[in-house]
Length: 161
Image 1 (cartoon, rainbow, N blue to C red):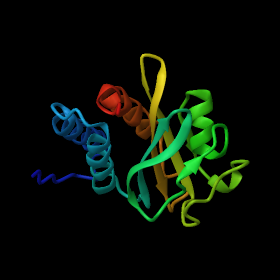
Image 2 (spheres, helix red, strand yellow):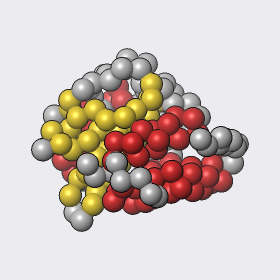
Image 3 (cartoon, one colour):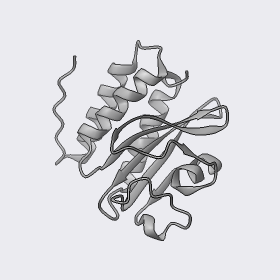
Image 4 (cartoon, one colour):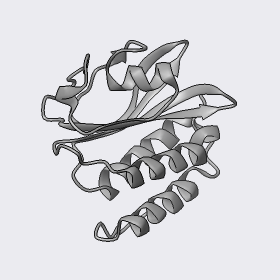
């Protein structure tokens, strides 16, 4: 059991705390779903102003809902569709300040106003995507994106099925 106390007022420190906790929680666990569940919980409890935090998994070429925190979500998202599908198809992060302006946005939760999706790659293959949603527009910064990219690198080998 881990009791984690995060300081949301110090964003760089907060990111370091979450990365350290994710490293410790996933270090010796071979089950990718268990690791995604713990990382989703860390993100949910550590980052302020979220209404959804979790993963979409690349299963046989399908983007399938993985462990998450928040309201029920879309189970499958097509490649190239919405923010998640676009990040998967391009293999690049997608930081969207206002999802209403993102053509083809899939509104799994109508309360979401901004979104950050980062691919988790292992040996050039998409394993999963980290997906963060917020009810605030422009919630995610370049610093948040860099943090999620670092988190994706950290856990990439620990999320495979």
